[in-house]
Length: 310
Picture 1 (cartoon, rainbow, N blue to C red):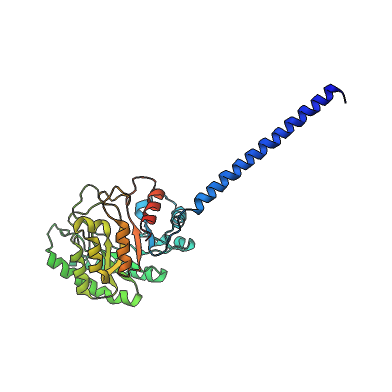
Picture 2 (picture 1 turned 45 degrees about the vertical axis):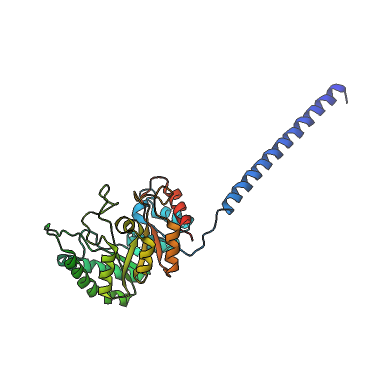
């Protein structure tokens, strides 16, 4: 081998070894990055499972318009239900291993506090009870309605209560037969800045008022939808009221206050303590997250679910 040829051979060998070394280095870096990513995923704390989480469809449907994508996000977040969603989507929920914690029914404007609405509301409730029973949905939402009737006449609170009791007594037996729970939602009437942050004029705007309706109906299948956001605005004393009304709790909703946003540190409700109170009184139902996103809903919901994971 000539000196020139030997130098060429050594140069080629050196280049080859350098390429092998560079490749090994890149492979090692990739392995480290993959390992780090896997470690980050594996160290994400698993949910304890004491709280059954549900996502309220109307809050997040504009972000995940496709119901399959919505369900995939719910599963990824650790939720077990998508609620207040059109029954046409219920088979998709089942396909993804999700339930519907509570079904929608008549609206909150025309409610059972006005006898003129009884036939319409009870027809809707009966239909929703049937659908819920067939699917395995445990609850159906219901509302008192507004203090002012369709003619603008104010319904006194005691009269509105009596009308509600009369209506619910007509449907309670059917709900018991079908083993579906009607959940009367308390809404705040103070906030008027956004149509879904408050409901001025709503008759069932104090939680004690709603519970008194339930007591007079006296059915194990007519209970309270305890919306933490609305109760905090109107009545406060969240933990005391959970203990006080423990026998009437049928469903729970969350949102940050003020603003009905995420459950992060910029709002006033101590959610871990409230969730612990629910467990302390033996609540075994769902907790539906019903806040209006101000950021990526996947991030906000992940924070909410882990915050409420006690």
